[in-house]
Amino acid sequence: MLKSVSIQAENGAEPLFSPLSLAVAPGSVTTIVGPSGIGKSTLMEFIGGHLPRGFRASGDVILDGRNVTRLPAEARRIGILFQDAALFPHLSVGDNLAFGLAAHVRGRAARTAAVAMALDQAGLPGFAARDPATLSGGQRARVALMRTLLAEPCALLLDEPFAKLDPALREELRRFVFDHVRDRDIPVLMVTHDAADAEAAGGPVVSL
Ligand SMILES: Nc1ncnc2c1ncn2[C@@H]1O[C@H](COP(=O)(O)OP(=O)(O)OP(=O)(O)O)[C@@H](O)[C@H]1O
Image 1 (cartoon, rainbow, N blue to C red):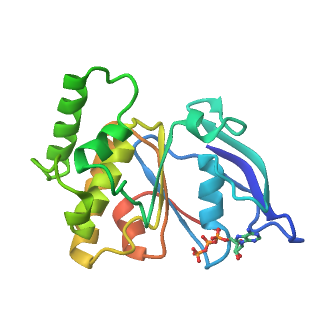
Image 2 (image 1 turned 90 degrees about the horizontal axis):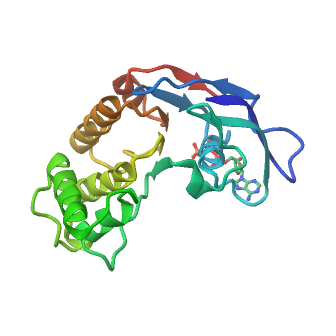
């Protein structure tokens, strides 16, 4: 839930957008739209705990009843997926996924099994040993998404996550993401310029 969130560039006279309050239901996707430069990405960075230097923000971010506004990013348990989500090039696909695994999955066997299951769910069985450089764009996007989900986030932020994919892949990955968050009851905020993304998300659309 966002309560009266407002963001202002330190050198700017006006806030980027009017104070924003909204609640996102578990398992639903709320889409944020607005003109270029209004502050959508900056809002997502603020919610995730990474407000860029040069900005001030006010208002609160409440997650599962916890006010996380003043917690560091790593304590918020908010998963973030951007358009350019990069995999670690020096790690295999499996190790990229293992990197994301929640800390409570302990022991080598359990972690290997969790990674294998995630690859199956992503439609990439047997890909654990692959070098990320050998994956297609859509395959990389699915691995990046899985890595984010394996951390078992309490909420998910998507900032134009499908923008660089061709239409078929875009639709496939979209379905994959929305099915997952519905299954896991994760609240999602998505920024997009594509009306089809918002329509596929099926949730409320908020204009900044
Ligand atoms: N370090 C900075 N200091 C001051 N202003 C900045 C800084 N970085 C970005 N801005 C400005 O802040 C505003 C918000 O940028 P942001 O990327 O959040 O917009 P956006 O709505 O996501 O845009 P787009 O749809 O084009 O991605 C822009 O007007 C941008 O020029």
